[in-house]
Amino acid sequence: RITAYTPMAVSGPAAGHPLLRTAADPAGRRILGTFNNCANGYTPWGTYLTCEENFNGYFVNGGSIPAEQRRYGISASGAGYRWDEHDPRFDAGQHPNEPNRFGWVVEIDPFDPAAAPIKRTALGRIKHEGAWVTLGSDRRVVVYMGDDERFEYIYKYISRRPFIEGYDANNRELLDDGTLYVARFNDDQSGEWLPLVWGSNGLTPENGFADQGEVLVKTRQAADLVGATKMDRPEWIAVNPRTRDVYCTLTNNSRRGANG
Image (cartoon, rainbow, N blue to C red; front, side, top):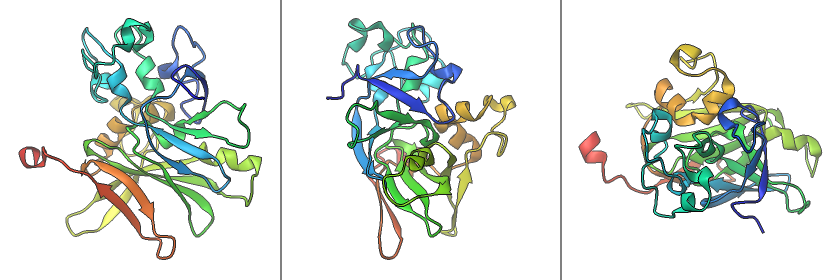
Protein backbone atom coordinates (compact mmCIF):
# COMPACT_ATOMS: atom_id res chain seq x y z
CA ARG A 1 0.00 0.00 0.00
CA ILE A 2 1.48 3.31 -1.12
CA THR A 3 0.89 6.27 1.18
CA ALA A 4 2.12 9.82 1.71
CA TYR A 5 4.99 8.30 3.71
CA THR A 6 6.14 5.52 1.36
CA PRO A 7 9.73 6.21 0.27
CA MET A 8 10.01 7.09 -3.42
CA ALA A 9 13.11 7.06 -5.58
CA VAL A 10 13.90 9.97 -7.90
CA SER A 11 15.40 9.71 -11.38
CA GLY A 12 16.11 11.94 -14.34
CA PRO A 13 17.79 15.35 -14.65
CA ALA A 14 16.30 16.80 -11.44
CA ALA A 15 17.30 13.88 -9.21
CA GLY A 16 19.52 15.23 -6.44
CA HIS A 17 19.00 18.81 -7.58
CA PRO A 18 19.48 21.52 -4.93
CA LEU A 19 15.81 22.47 -5.36
CA LEU A 20 14.80 18.96 -4.24
CA ARG A 21 17.07 18.81 -1.19
CA THR A 22 15.69 19.17 2.32
CA ALA A 23 17.03 18.80 5.84
CA ALA A 24 15.48 15.33 6.01
CA ASP A 25 16.80 14.39 2.56
CA PRO A 26 20.02 16.33 1.92
CA ALA A 27 20.72 14.23 -1.18
CA GLY A 28 17.38 15.10 -2.81
CA ARG A 29 16.84 11.50 -3.89
CA ARG A 30 14.40 9.97 -1.39
CA ILE A 31 10.95 11.54 -1.28
CA LEU A 32 8.34 10.46 1.21
CA GLY A 33 5.12 9.67 -0.56
CA THR A 34 2.88 10.53 -3.45
CA PHE A 35 -0.58 12.04 -3.10
CA ASN A 36 -3.47 13.61 -4.96
CA ASN A 37 -2.83 11.11 -7.72
CA CYS A 38 -5.18 11.65 -10.63
CA ALA A 39 -5.33 9.57 -13.81
CA ASN A 40 -2.69 7.08 -14.82
CA GLY A 41 -0.85 5.61 -17.75
CA TYR A 42 0.97 2.42 -18.59
CA THR A 43 4.20 1.71 -20.43
CA PRO A 44 4.96 -0.76 -23.23
CA TRP A 45 7.21 -2.64 -20.77
CA GLY A 46 4.33 -3.27 -18.37
CA THR A 47 4.71 -0.68 -15.61
CA TYR A 48 2.13 1.83 -14.42
CA LEU A 49 2.34 5.60 -14.17
CA THR A 50 0.47 7.54 -11.50
CA CYS A 51 0.24 11.29 -11.80
CA GLU A 52 0.51 13.86 -9.02
CA GLU A 53 -2.02 16.59 -9.66
CA ASN A 54 -3.19 19.22 -7.14
CA PHE A 55 -0.35 18.70 -4.69
CA ASN A 56 -0.28 22.39 -3.76
CA GLY A 57 -3.40 22.07 -1.62
CA TYR A 58 -1.56 20.00 0.98
CA PHE A 59 0.95 22.78 1.66
CA VAL A 60 0.58 26.13 3.37
CA ASN A 61 2.83 29.17 3.59
CA GLY A 62 1.73 31.78 6.07
CA GLY A 63 4.62 34.12 5.32
CA SER A 64 5.85 35.83 2.18
CA ILE A 65 5.15 33.38 -0.63
CA PRO A 66 7.94 33.34 -3.26
CA ALA A 67 7.02 33.55 -6.92
CA GLU A 68 8.09 29.95 -7.53
CA GLN A 69 5.55 28.67 -5.00
CA ARG A 70 2.83 31.08 -6.05
CA ARG A 71 3.14 29.90 -9.67
CA TYR A 72 2.09 26.43 -8.49
CA GLY A 73 -0.72 27.64 -6.25
CA ILE A 74 0.83 27.51 -2.78
CA SER A 75 -1.23 29.71 -0.47
CA ALA A 76 -1.56 30.66 3.19
CA SER A 77 -4.48 28.30 3.78
CA GLY A 78 -3.95 25.47 1.32
CA ALA A 79 -6.99 23.30 0.64
CA GLY A 80 -7.86 22.91 4.31
CA TYR A 81 -6.23 19.52 4.84
CA ARG A 82 -4.17 20.87 7.79
CA TRP A 83 -1.35 18.36 7.24
CA ASP A 84 1.13 21.03 8.31
CA GLU A 85 -0.29 20.85 11.83
CA HIS A 86 0.91 17.25 12.11
CA ASP A 87 3.96 17.21 9.83
CA PRO A 88 5.98 20.43 9.51
CA ARG A 89 7.30 19.48 6.08
CA PHE A 90 3.96 20.63 4.68
CA ASP A 91 4.69 24.15 5.87
CA ALA A 92 6.28 25.56 2.73
CA GLY A 93 7.50 28.58 4.67
CA GLN A 94 9.68 26.41 6.89
CA HIS A 95 10.52 23.86 4.18
CA PRO A 96 10.50 25.75 0.87
CA ASN A 97 11.83 22.86 -1.23
CA GLU A 98 9.28 20.30 -0.09
CA PRO A 99 6.61 21.33 -2.65
CA ASN A 100 9.21 20.87 -5.40
CA ARG A 101 9.24 17.17 -4.59
CA PHE A 102 5.65 16.75 -5.82
CA GLY A 103 3.92 17.30 -9.14
CA TRP A 104 5.73 14.44 -10.89
CA VAL A 105 4.79 11.30 -12.79
CA VAL A 106 5.53 8.23 -10.66
CA GLU A 107 6.36 4.83 -12.18
CA ILE A 108 5.26 1.69 -10.31
CA ASP A 109 6.48 -1.78 -11.25
CA PRO A 110 3.84 -4.48 -10.61
CA PHE A 111 6.41 -7.19 -11.42
CA ASP A 112 8.56 -6.11 -8.48
CA PRO A 113 6.28 -5.11 -5.58
CA ALA A 114 9.26 -4.51 -3.30
CA ALA A 115 10.81 -1.93 -5.63
CA ALA A 116 10.45 1.73 -4.69
CA PRO A 117 8.18 3.74 -6.99
CA ILE A 118 10.20 6.20 -9.08
CA LYS A 119 9.45 9.87 -9.67
CA ARG A 120 10.47 10.45 -13.30
CA THR A 121 11.59 14.07 -13.36
CA ALA A 122 12.30 14.19 -17.11
CA LEU A 123 8.51 14.28 -17.62
CA GLY A 124 8.29 17.66 -15.91
CA ARG A 125 6.65 19.03 -12.78
CA ILE A 126 3.08 20.16 -13.37
CA LYS A 127 -0.40 19.26 -12.13
CA HIS A 128 -0.48 16.05 -14.13
CA GLU A 129 -3.92 14.84 -15.11
CA GLY A 130 -2.54 11.74 -16.81
CA ALA A 131 0.33 10.36 -18.88
CA TRP A 132 -0.62 8.68 -22.15
CA VAL A 133 2.24 6.57 -23.50
CA THR A 134 2.60 5.53 -27.12
CA LEU A 135 5.37 4.60 -29.56
CA GLY A 136 6.48 6.74 -32.49
CA SER A 137 7.18 5.32 -35.95
CA ASP A 138 10.81 4.95 -34.92
CA ARG A 139 9.81 3.06 -31.73
CA ARG A 140 10.79 5.90 -29.44
CA VAL A 141 8.53 6.40 -26.44
CA VAL A 142 6.17 9.39 -26.52
CA VAL A 143 4.27 10.55 -23.42
CA TYR A 144 1.44 13.10 -23.75
CA MET A 145 0.42 15.08 -20.65
CA GLY A 146 -1.91 17.91 -19.69
CA ASP A 147 -1.47 20.41 -16.85
CA ASP A 148 -4.98 20.45 -15.40
CA GLU A 149 -5.51 24.07 -14.49
CA ARG A 150 -6.98 27.05 -16.31
CA PHE A 151 -4.50 28.75 -18.67
CA GLU A 152 -1.97 25.91 -18.42
CA TYR A 153 -0.33 23.86 -21.13
CA ILE A 154 -0.14 20.60 -23.08
CA TYR A 155 3.17 18.69 -23.03
CA LYS A 156 4.81 15.74 -24.66
CA TYR A 157 8.01 13.86 -23.90
CA ILE A 158 10.05 11.88 -26.45
CA SER A 159 12.72 9.40 -25.40
CA ARG A 160 16.15 9.56 -26.99
CA ARG A 161 16.38 5.82 -27.60
CA PRO A 162 13.79 3.38 -28.98
CA PHE A 163 11.79 0.87 -27.00
CA ILE A 164 13.13 -2.69 -26.80
CA GLU A 165 10.34 -5.25 -26.99
CA GLY A 166 9.47 -6.98 -23.73
CA TYR A 167 10.31 -6.48 -20.08
CA ASP A 168 13.84 -5.21 -20.66
CA ALA A 169 15.82 -3.37 -17.98
CA ASN A 170 17.16 -0.95 -20.58
CA ASN A 171 13.64 0.36 -21.15
CA ARG A 172 13.62 1.89 -17.68
CA GLU A 173 15.99 4.63 -18.80
CA LEU A 174 13.63 5.71 -21.58
CA LEU A 175 11.69 7.92 -19.17
CA ASP A 176 14.90 9.57 -17.95
CA ASP A 177 16.72 10.29 -21.18
CA GLY A 178 14.68 12.37 -23.60
CA THR A 179 13.20 15.77 -24.35
CA LEU A 180 10.15 17.48 -22.88
CA TYR A 181 8.13 19.74 -25.19
CA VAL A 182 5.25 22.16 -24.68
CA ALA A 183 2.63 23.00 -27.34
CA ARG A 184 2.08 26.29 -29.09
CA PHE A 185 -0.94 26.68 -31.36
CA ASN A 186 -1.10 29.39 -34.02
CA ASP A 187 -4.03 31.42 -35.32
CA ASP A 188 -3.87 29.62 -38.70
CA GLN A 189 -4.56 26.30 -36.89
CA SER A 190 -0.98 25.15 -37.24
CA GLY A 191 1.12 24.35 -34.21
CA GLU A 192 4.55 23.42 -33.00
CA TRP A 193 6.22 21.66 -30.12
CA LEU A 194 8.68 23.87 -28.25
CA PRO A 195 11.57 22.01 -26.55
CA LEU A 196 12.11 22.78 -22.88
CA VAL A 197 15.86 22.36 -23.07
CA TRP A 198 18.25 24.33 -20.93
CA GLY A 199 20.36 26.80 -22.90
CA SER A 200 17.78 27.26 -25.67
CA ASN A 201 14.69 29.48 -26.11
CA GLY A 202 15.82 31.76 -23.29
CA LEU A 203 16.06 28.97 -20.70
CA THR A 204 19.31 30.32 -19.33
CA PRO A 205 20.75 31.45 -15.99
CA GLU A 206 19.91 35.05 -16.86
CA ASN A 207 16.23 34.07 -16.88
CA GLY A 208 16.32 31.98 -13.72
CA PHE A 209 17.28 28.53 -15.01
CA ALA A 210 20.66 27.31 -13.81
CA ASP A 211 20.48 23.90 -15.49
CA GLN A 212 18.11 21.32 -16.97
CA GLY A 213 17.07 20.17 -13.51
CA GLU A 214 15.78 23.64 -12.72
CA VAL A 215 13.90 23.76 -16.04
CA LEU A 216 12.05 20.62 -14.99
CA VAL A 217 11.37 21.69 -11.40
CA LYS A 218 10.02 24.97 -12.79
CA THR A 219 8.28 23.49 -15.83
CA ARG A 220 5.44 26.00 -15.76
CA GLN A 221 7.80 28.96 -15.71
CA ALA A 222 9.82 27.43 -18.56
CA ALA A 223 6.65 27.00 -20.63
CA ASP A 224 5.68 30.61 -19.88
CA LEU A 225 9.03 31.84 -21.11
CA VAL A 226 9.08 29.97 -24.43
CA GLY A 227 5.60 31.20 -25.34
CA ALA A 228 3.36 28.12 -25.07
CA THR A 229 -0.39 28.43 -25.66
CA LYS A 230 -2.54 28.76 -22.55
CA MET A 231 -5.30 26.17 -22.59
CA ASP A 232 -8.66 25.60 -20.86
CA ARG A 233 -7.74 22.92 -18.33
CA PRO A 234 -6.11 20.24 -20.51
CA GLU A 235 -7.02 16.93 -18.90
CA TRP A 236 -7.16 13.49 -20.43
CA ILE A 237 -5.15 12.86 -23.62
CA ALA A 238 -5.53 9.79 -25.82
CA VAL A 239 -4.04 8.54 -29.09
CA ASN A 240 -6.09 6.74 -31.74
CA PRO A 241 -4.18 3.47 -32.27
CA ARG A 242 -5.13 3.33 -35.96
CA THR A 243 -4.90 6.90 -37.21
CA ARG A 244 -2.35 8.12 -34.60
CA ASP A 245 -4.49 11.23 -34.07
CA VAL A 246 -4.06 12.76 -30.61
CA TYR A 247 -7.08 14.00 -28.66
CA CYS A 248 -7.14 16.20 -25.58
CA THR A 249 -10.13 16.95 -23.34
CA LEU A 250 -10.35 20.61 -22.30
CA THR A 251 -12.66 20.69 -19.28
CA ASN A 252 -13.59 24.35 -18.90
CA ASN A 253 -12.30 27.83 -18.28
CA SER A 254 -14.73 30.18 -16.62
CA ARG A 255 -12.05 32.87 -16.61
CA ARG A 256 -11.42 32.84 -20.37
CA GLY A 257 -13.75 35.75 -21.10
CA ALA A 258 -12.17 37.98 -18.48
CA ASN A 259 -8.59 37.16 -19.43
CA GLY A 260 -8.68 36.91 -23.18
